[in-house]
Image (cartoon, rainbow, N blue to C red; front, side):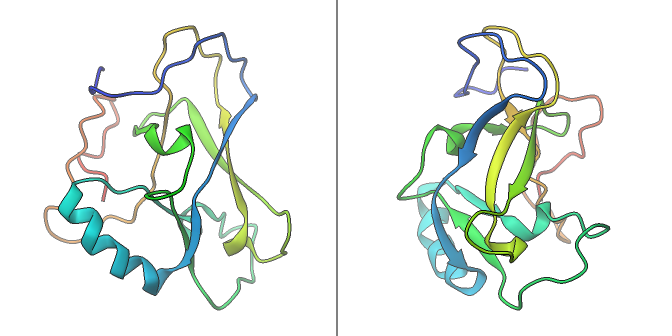
Length: 148
């Protein structure tokens, strides 16, 4: 389903291929709330909650501070990749400079073969909040109806 602006494949991408890293400022969760006010005014949010992508079955210990990646002021093409409830990219956390999963680098990998012109998408995995939240317009058969 076309959603307006999108990132599309310019060449075939085989399943399992690293596509890009989600890049931005690593900020503490409490700092994020201050930044969210300015983002809500602009209508854009480029926040990625690292903790929401941690596999709790495999990771038993976490650092005490929650972090997010804020790509509002600094980022790459990854911040323009849309959400889908049935995405063709998956998020994988990669430990580089720290063993704390909440400080992991975030890589986006193809979950299937992607053809030229196909829109790239990943599941933002925001926790569903009570109330209306943000409606999802991904058009997937398994659409949750909202992003958060």
